[in-house]
Length: 471
Image (cartoon, rainbow, N blue to C red; front, top):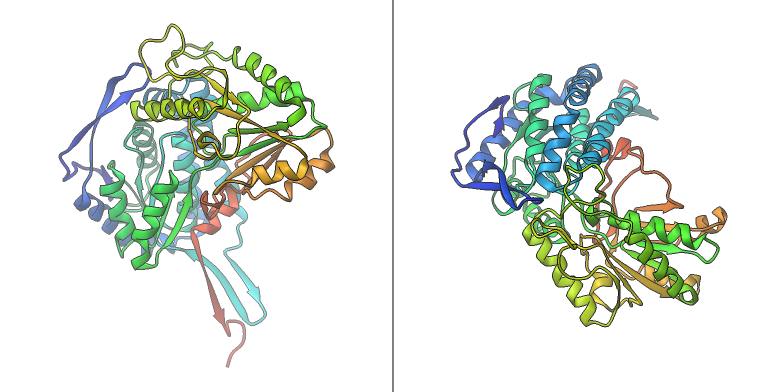
C-alpha cells in the first residue's frame, strides 16, 4: 500500500491473484489491506489535510501539471496494464481507457486555472473550500477514467485522498500511484490501498475521520456505502448503474442509427454503465431493424486483446461471465427473439471470458433483460407505437444515467431530450467529452463528475458575513 508518501507493507496478509481474463491465468498477485491498514491511511490523510487544504491555486496547479507530464510519459505502460487486468483490446486500452485518464487530468488543470474559489455577494464573502478527507472507491470497467475523474478534482479542491481501486483490476491503480509518487505530493495527501469493499470500503464509509466517500460501482454497492456513511452524516457521491435507452425516431436514418447503436452498446465488451443497451425502434420497422443489427454484429471481431484487429476482448471475470450467461438464458426463457449470439463463447475461443455479442428482439419492458443491467455485450431491441410511447419506455427503469436519441431533425431530437429522465442525453452520436457533467437520476446515483461539476462536488460552501464592512 502507499501511505503517507511511502510504499509500505500492509498489515493485511491475505493475498489475491489478479486474473488475466483473456487467459484465465494469474498475471499478478496483490495483498489485500484490512481495517487497520485503512485506518492508517485515513489518519495519514487527516494529518495532511490542514496544510494541503490551505495551499494556494498555484501550488495545486503545479502538482497537477507534474502529474499530467508523468502520466503522458507512461501512457503505453498504462494501456498494457489495463489490457492485462480487464481485457480491453490494447489499441482501445491506449486510445480510450488510458487516454480518458489523461483527458480528465488535463481538463482539471484547465478548470483550476480560472475557478472562482471566492466571490463577493453584497456584504458577504462566499468561499469554496475543500470538503475534507475523501475516500474514493473505483471500479474495474473504466479504471483510469474513474480514478482520474475523482483524484484530479479532489486534489484541485484541496482534499486529501484514500483510494481503493477495484481488487479485480488493481494494476492500473498501482501504476497511477507510481506516477503520483514521482510527482512529489506532500506525504499523506494521496494514499492508496488494495482491498475488498466489505473490508476497506466499509471501513472508509464508517470512519468519522472521512468527510466524503465517492463510489463508482453497482447500485447495490452504492446503497451499502450510503447506509454505512449515514451515522457520520458524511457526503456520499455515487455514480452507479444504468440501463440506457437509445430512441431511434421515425425520421432517423435507420440503417445508420441501428448500426451505430449496436457498436456503441458492444463497445468495451458492453461493460460501460452508460452503454445504450435498450434500443427503441418504431414497431412497424422492427424486422428491418433486427436485420440491420444482425448484419452489424456479424462484423464485430472478438478475440485476443493483443490482436490489433480485434474489436472486443473478454469480459473481466468468471463471475461476470456467468452472470451474463444467466441473463442471456433468462431472455430466451422469457420469449425474447434471439437475433444473434446467445449462450457460450464465440466459435474458436475455448479459453478466456469471451461472450458472444448477443442481440434480442421483440423485448418488452417486463422482461428481466429490459430492466437488469447485464454489463456485457447484450443489446435488447424494443418496439414503440408513437413518440409518447417511446418516452414512456425510455423512462420505465429505476436508472437514469444516460439516454440516446437518433433523429434526422435536430429540433425534434432536442424536444424529446427534455422528456428523458437521465443525467446525460446524447443526440445523434455526439462525441463524448470530459467537459460534460456525468452522473445520473434515480438509482444511477447522486452528484456529478467531470470538469468544473466534479470539482464543485469536492467542496463545501462557506458564507462569511460582514466581510466587507466594519461593524
